[in-house]
Amino acid sequence: MAHAVTRRSAGGASRLAAAGALAGLAGGAAMALLAMILSATAGLSPWHPVSALLVELAPSSALGAAVIPFGLFLHLVASVFLGMLFAALFGQFPEEVLLPAGALYGLGIWLVIRYVAFPAASFATSGATPALVAEYLVYGSMLWLLVPIDSWLEKRL
Image (spheres, rainbow, N blue to C red):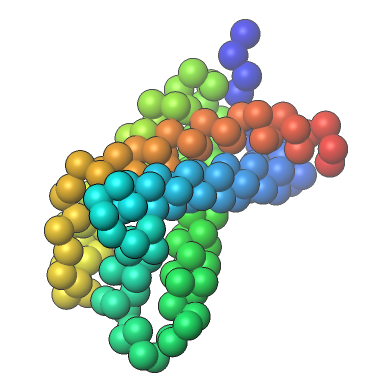
C-alpha cells in the first residue's frame, strides 16, 4: 500500500512542514551541486551560477567576499520555503504521485521565475537553457523525499 503523508493533527501538520523543509533543502543542495558541475564542465567557475544571479541583485562590490555564501544562503532559504509549500500542496497525495508532481512543480517554479519574476524585476537572463531546466527538474524531483523524511520524523516526534 502506498504511503500517504497525512495531516491528522497539529503535530502532523508541523511534522509535514518539517519534512517539506528538509526535502526542499535536499532538493536545493542537489540543484546547486548540479549547477556547479554543469558550470565547471562548461569551463566556467563552479560558483558562476551563484555570482551570475547575485550580480542582478547587488553589485559584487557591495557584498565583497560574502557574495558566494550570501547567494548560497538565499538559494537554500528559497529551497526550504518552496519545499514547505510543496508539502502543504501535495503532502496528502500517495507516494507514487510525489515524484511526477515534484518534477512538474520544479518546472512550474522555473516558468514563474523565467516568465514572471525575472521580467518584473528587469533581470537579464537567458533562463531557457536546457541545463537550467534540468536543475529545476532535479529540485522538484528531489521533493519525493518528503515521504521518507516524514516517516522518519513520525518515529522520532
